[in-house]
Amino acid sequence: MEHSYSEPTPEPEPLSELEASPIVAPIEAPSSKQDAPPSDPENVKKRQNIFTRTLWTFIMIGVFIGLLLMGHAYMVLLVMLCQTLVYREVTALFVLAQSDKRDEVEGKDPWSKTLNWYFFAATNYFLYGESIIYYFKHVVFSEAQLLPFATNHRLISFALYTIGLMGFVLSLQKRYLRKQFGLFCWVHMSLLLIVVSSHFIVNNILEGLIWFWVPASLVICNDVFAYIWGMSIGRTPLIKLSPKKTVEGFVGAFISTVLFSLLWGSYFMRFNYMICPVHDLGVSAWSNVQCVPNPVFVWKDWQIPTPLATVLSTTLQKQITSISYVPYHLHLLSMSFFASLVAPFGGFFASGFKRAFNIKDFGHSIPGHGGMTDRMDCQFLMGVFTYVYYSSLIRQHNVTVGSILQKIVSGLSVDDQLELIVDLKKYLEGMGVPVPC
Image (tube, rainbow, N blue to C red):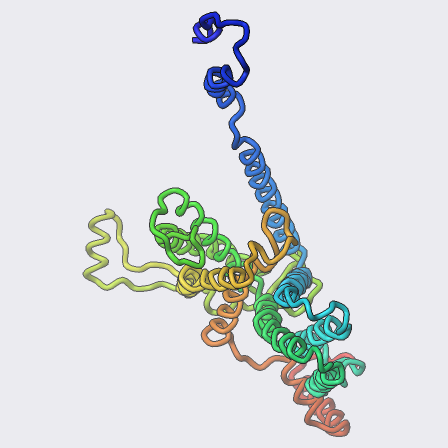
């Protein structure tokens, strides 16, 4: 073919380049397309994005597992860091929404950003203080220095919020009233959706790492399998807010997440470090953690009805009269259903939010993944569900040393407390228990 192109019919010398160009162009075009496709730079960029996204996925997983092994305190710090980044990204969208108003000059309201973070700090003080007082009564009410903080926590929190409200009113400027009140509402919406949700996630950690680790893993699993099934067999669009989501991916992810939850949860429920509520923030995966396990983690036998037992024994050639299970398996099914059928709507909500502002990602905190909000949208909804589910159906409300100490410190005078100590000492000595002086 090249030889036939290279020997054209001789033409007269005066032949112009304009006349020759129609002949030359079609001949060279095919070879140039074969050697260097025009879309090659786009493919290179796409491969680089995939590499960056994959690399940072493994980095995040590694950091996550490392902090999990280091202890509850590090997981709480991770949640605090994530909520701070999400809060910054969401509140920054208000500035983006106002950026097209040319009549408002930037820098005229220096208090806005300061008050945003003041309300953020005050809300965290209240919520994390509530968690510390509830889960560490035995420490807080036994330390004289911490006692004023514990007994007056809500009053202090309300005072801090009131100071912020007064500061906001004093910062109002006639020209920027609409923007300032809009930002005030925006900040409170962000505090409700982000900081309050993070507070519940922290409580899940303090109730036992398994109530944070497994639900978070189910959301990640569902997201991964929705992508895999959607790319493999996805054909039917699921929702207009997320055009890439498909019905096939949604259903496939649901089945995969249910199966994954039973295997994943059954493995981690074997470790006391995962299932024990926290009493000491200094423990880690290498500590000897001991506790009385919650009844949902205790194995039980379900007696199979006689007709069904006969059929199973005949079919399997083995005597089967009962099936061993733990109630936690049933709770895993509930959590996997929520992670598959409801939690994704947190992502759809975030997608609609981004479309409203005509942005692709909430930020650029994580290379290849966008902002922290893009990764935490479903996790917040899952965390709140887990806390409500656990506190309603699973948590045991037993009398603890911390709860008794709280009543003694807050309800008895000093003389009554001393009398209680004397009486308790007599009781223990009468039982033959040595009491240290």
